[in-house]
Amino acid sequence: MPGTLSAAAVAVLTTAAPTDKVALTRRFAADWSAGRITALGDTAPPDRPARPERPELRLPRDMPKRGRGGSAQNRIALLHALAHIELNAIDLAWDLCARFAGAALPRGFFDDWVRVADDEARHFDLLERRMNALGAAYGDLPAHDGLWQSAQATAHDLAARLAVVPMVLEARGLDVTPDTVARLRGFGDAESAGILRLIHDDEIVHVAAGRRWFEHVCGERGAEPVALWQELVRRYFRGQVKRPFNIDGRLRAGFGPEFYEPLAAD
Image (cartoon, rainbow, N blue to C red; front, side, top):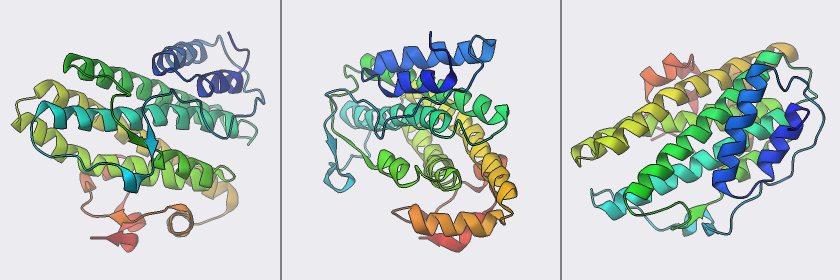
């Protein structure tokens, strides 16, 4: 067992096989929660996490368009894309724990992001099992590498990482998931819809953690949160903050429209 949280985080980040990454995450999260791991340590994370040979990683612009119909092929493509996001999210949470272990943060910061990593591992497992039930597996389709590009761009600054990853990328998940859940129910796929509803509700907690710790960092720096968030998103997010917004879900995360409406694009 790794002796420190950063060593545990790096063990996950350097594990390529998704099933092993999930298993290690669940084990280390339990060890941290139970007090079997207590020290943060100073093990440095890799620039990029280990990845399996499949799926083939492409630039976002080179990804095939997904159909919106209810065929099994379209639903598998949707679940595969979401599983890839969740696998990246496991690594993003552990990277936070290792990369910023020396940043004089309260233990609650690490409690939150270890919990997020554990949630993301559970989400990946649910999506993988559902794909298996539909006759597919993670790696069967290509995937894009855009999420880790955002991580690399913000590796030097905790505020920037929190502004972009939980408060833009995960918040976007809150916006699009309710419509996807409704479409899946309309196709008669209540099982997939239920998984996405569970993920949506957990992601509210994750966005709330991002917002809470972003405001903590702002307080340490004497910065105004809304202004700094907008500045960092303009600087580091390669894309647009898109409407429509799930205002209710965002408000449940404590993430008000004063942050994102001034940057919004239709």
